Image (cartoon, rainbow, N blue to C red; front, side, top):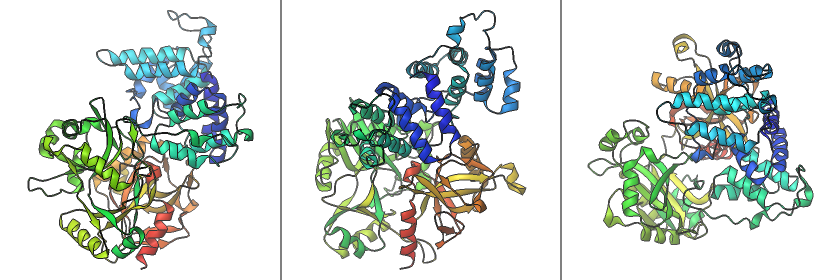
Length: 593
């Protein structure tokens, strides 16, 4: 498919606020694409060049794009940018008015309007991203100009938006999975199967490529052909592979040791540390660290990388919690641990706040997937993989077996005394269900006092209002948060927060909001008129919120509201991993017990 055709689909996606319509458009687009094209379109349609965990940074600012566009025409690109506020529109307008190139840049008209193929555009975008070293800024300007020269107006608009990270299609990975199901079966019946595959190898482009490669007898351009509804998606057996992150399993909550015992029986108990969850991939002697939000954070934690290189020699994927530990051996607070999450002055912070990685699971080793093995067997394999004689940076998560309610209560008390959040209780025979939250793992945390709910809420920032008074200097006055409804792939509101933040936190919230703002409310947001915002943002920012109580509310689209909500901090999570509406209901019920 040429990039002009792909840009037509991007325009359709941008114009609609309906998730169902987005699904239809994506299904048609992927149906017409080859496997290779489909892979790249999955990335590009979300404004990326690769999967979330390996997406090159373009390293391009507005002023460089202005210079690149300016070289195409005698018109003042800077003036047009000030008028339109969107360099994509500037590129489109200037390209639509160019009959030929300026002197010194002569090419034929056929070259100017050449129907350049999508893979070629991706290749040229990658070249822009990789340009580095002395003179790299001028090189990027030259490459952007060369690309825009070859694109028709609409294509130029979307290429510029991709380059600047300002594509506004507004759909999630889950919408792509729905579209693939519609493409194959004409309905959403294959969504669950596709999601299970994606959870094991969290690379949306790779999934599209594999699905397209497995489809047979799908006439070109025919999306939703029901003759393909029996497509054997289940035969696409996908195993975890070091280098590609697995979506992390999550646990449910329980209000008491007795409830836990009734759900699990004899089970393993592990400390629940208040640190940073990490998935470590060791392959060919190289270590990669991935956060819960699929960010590659390897460069931030050289001490942990060094420990893994020394203590684990086989190719494998292990999972654990990174936490700062004091000279006295005590766990430090999350606020101290999170200071290590930085891109600058890393060596200095390694000396000040050394980290330990407490591993609790192994997902694969030497090319074999372990997800379907029982928890106790995976623990045996983890213990065999870790050489504690070669260092102390990587440690096994403390663990005991519960034989009754009393054991759970005693271990919980021991964990709290040691400075942890509480414990995880895990069924001994449970498999690792990638990307799922269920009662195979149950978290039991120290409750707040009786006036508060039993846990914090992980919410998505949906938008914010302009500041007034003192906060006019911050450019933000309050912000709207919501929780996730997985069945409909929607975000529903639970609170608007306007107090309790420090000046620095307000500045950070404004910076994050500005990074992801969009011109209109995303199609998968359900917001009442009373909760509208001056500025809407993409569902990218996840925050941890503490509240005194959950109450029923007709003003919020979730049906519930947080009473006296306040910001605890930012979370390294995908928006789909935020607290769900179902969890809000459970927390509401728990506080009534």
